[in-house]
Image (tube, one colour):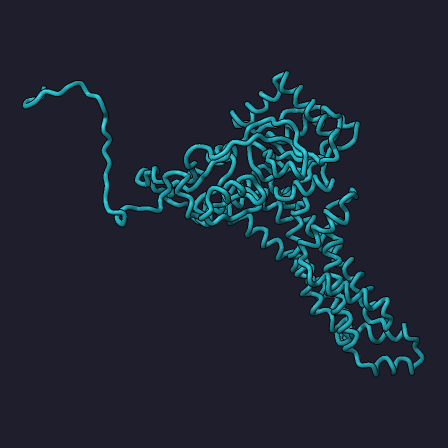
Length: 509
């Protein structure tokens, strides 16, 4: 009961706020998505999120990442203030990573569909018929419910004899659940189940081309894959390059950031925990990155691929270099001029550009293994450098050696093989070894054409564990081991071709 005055019935609730000078109030916290305009925003390269961020945050610094794992790690490590990614993936990620949170409601919602080559309308119509069937019988609703609503991680058994050939499907294996991920060395997820069911509908065996997201449209446009199955958002710009199926799902995108960057996050409620010992962290990382879900098989497959590409590209490049060297040293213009052009062109072109040109342009209409394309591309690049090594090595041998050999009755070819070449090899090998090591390290870019090498295996593992340290250190060590072993082989070759070594060994015998 009021002592001094009487009040009417209440008619409005007035909120209360604390206020102060701007300089006394923290302004680096994010309250709404509008606060991103002067921040660093991460997006996937070539994605709808990239276009959205550029249009809606003109003053922000937009950074593009080639894989979802790189985007997530950039936010976690504080390299960027926030990222934009699809909401379904983020919810799955937040189950494991308690440091991340969403900022506000979804910023956009766009329908997704399968992508097809514009000259392959028959396959698109077959998918639309398949889609209509699974929508009518409730299969699509069941797939959406299991993977996206319930967060399932078990692939159902889908019978498929595959008697009508092969369906090549382009996808991104490190996209993450619920859409696509590698578990126990097998692809699973919402995207994968749809592809498998469509393959069974056509009675075709599904073969996956695992590549970077930004290369999917180029791959289907050039006929390298039959269709894109990677929850591809349907946009007007993409429609100018490829054809889309009927939409089968609406994908929502949200902004995410570290919880500590949010104004609504109460840091005082974050109870500090004691960090485990270093050896314990290493043991946990080893288990999650290597043992769990048999991830060592990914590393083993990637290791074999890297070694195969390195060795065969070196052999092919050495043969090409020898041929180009012969042409370059010829006095005939018809041989000399093409060799000069080849050397200047290949040495002036980035290896990644050469790799993409050979895969998407030169062999655009040819069904060829990406591993073979990588061997050809790296071999051609290696040959351009090796040819000049051979030429300078041969020209460094005194011409008197050739004249002496001819005077002793050797033919010109015999003189080159038995007198000039051994001396040239001794002078070439130190430089050749360095170029060879560079080639081994350059193979780390083959993931751009759907080759699962060591680096790609690391990306796949990081997409599951979001561990920035262990997978990268592990791959760095493996590259070092590969280079070291192959270098020992070349050093052995260098020793056995050294006349001093031969004389020393003969004297001991």
